[in-house]
Length: 273
Ligand code: NAP
Image (cartoon, rainbow, N blue to C red; front, side, top):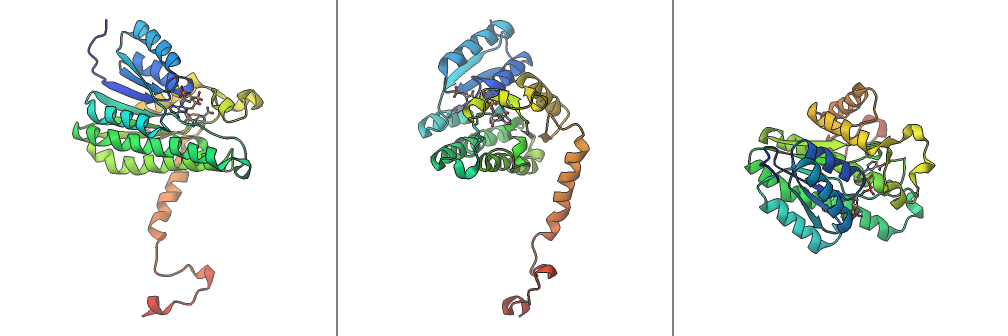
């Protein structure tokens, strides 16, 4: 029997495996009811059954391919119409390990539609309700390649840089409206992601690979600590803070009527007049 939850409902995309399945486990244990989304119905059903038994929480599953517009629209509708939803975990994503120019552009397009397009539409569907209800949380799973685009495939890195920038911008816009946004930047994590990306994880040095359990536990600890950006592997948070401070310090100097003197440009007639 399930009991009423004060935490509300968490909708997790890509919950059938890997990082998303661990979020499902941890959030159910924190007292959230769950809506689990992915394509693999039997995996979702098995996870839902286990979590219902272990935690007594309500766990719903929705089979959906987020690269399919009709399926995606169904999840958007759920996010718009279910006022019990307090947390969205935008986790579903795919990667690629092959260099940019060795990759099939159709696969790259598919990746952008999932990692960027679906995540954006689901965020747009969730945020107005959270704002209207005075609070809620969005967790966006980015990656360390967002700030290290030379690692792995460049389109994958670009898609995760989008997730980071969108999260920073959303946090800026929503902080005063009671909605929290966290971007999580995992390093290499031991999941099937690497099989899908074409480089099984056993090819990586074990010293750089974290378990999905540790990654999610660290990310949730970062959320509890109020972090907007969580990089589970980075030993010294001050390094991120300095990087972010350098970016912010430049922001007042990035737009000007005058080209920087190092370019040696004589002022144009329009600018001079
Ligand atoms: P994973 O084990 O392969 O899990 C990916 C999840 O996304 C699965 O549940 C999969 O389920 C779902 N999914 C994939 N395509 C989908 C689609 N078209 N529609 C709906 N669901 C879809 O990989 P993971 O490592 O947990 O990845 C989760 C997130 O972490 C991704 O955004 C990834 O970019 C990010 N990340 C991973 C690593 C890493 O090293 N593993 C590092 C940094 C960031 P179905 O197949 O059932 O649909």
